[in-house]
Length: 317
Ligand SMILES: C[S@@+](CC[C@H](N)C(=O)[O-])C[C@H]1O[C@@H](n2cnc3c(N)ncnc32)[C@H](O)[C@@H]1O
Image 1: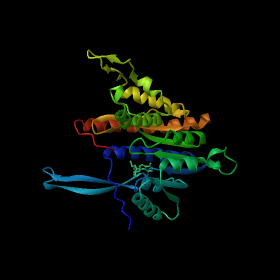
Image 2: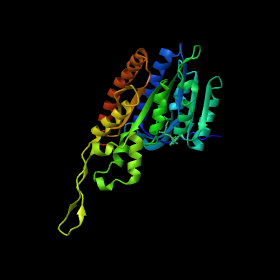
Image 3: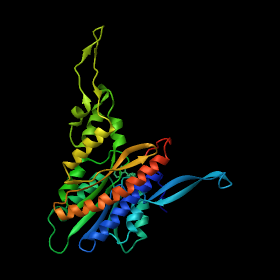
């Protein structure tokens, strides 16, 4: 028996997954007749999302109690999509999640769907380094992938994005965890540890963030002759997000405007981007049309949801 319980996220997660499903439908509908279409989800979880919800109360005239509900996660949604993907590849680092994904895939015996256990970066780098993803399409098989990068934190390595960009055949939806990056960027420059520096350089793909975000001053002496330093971060959340988008645009020729995923009342802490490095202008126009439509539609829902949530504590994603 596999255990598909996976408690994470909240109603903002449904918004994110709705956006991915909407683009998936656009993607398979627009090009599924001409191309071999793949869905690649290396942070797939168990395929489902478990949520604890309160029911009852005075309006229901029933005592308040907590129930557990299961919602389809990214993998379950991708498997059930129509028009369908021709090939689906899921992965996760956790053994229990992989077992649950395998059980889910077995419910769709007519699909070419496989589950890989292990690190998402290795998974993507291995798959997209293969000749069929790197070389120009030969006559006969023309392939395109929709890749969904949905980590908890800053797990996506820059090299992984480089490999995806080099393939030129992937529309990549990337959940950028701005909250995690901002947390690493301490206000006092002297508090930046080597570990934080390395994590941030991996996230931005460059070490230029340091001079961009910090007002670096010389050491000063206090009245007792001890040295101190006033260097502070001057970049705010918006500046950090813009710099990150610039870095992504150095790799991909198309980077959408972000869909802000408002978690509780802390708006814009997660930013969902669609990116592609497809060199064909007509393909880029089509990707932009689909991605812009999805982002506009769900941006309004995100703002509305965050207004409703005003004052609610921000849980982790
Ligand atoms: C936010 S959840 C994904 C949820 C899933 N996309 C969904 O909507 O149902 C992140 C998942 O990534 C997995 N994970 C974390 N680090 C990973 C890594 N380095 N490689 C692969 N999976 C990882 C976790 O075990 C977790 O299941």
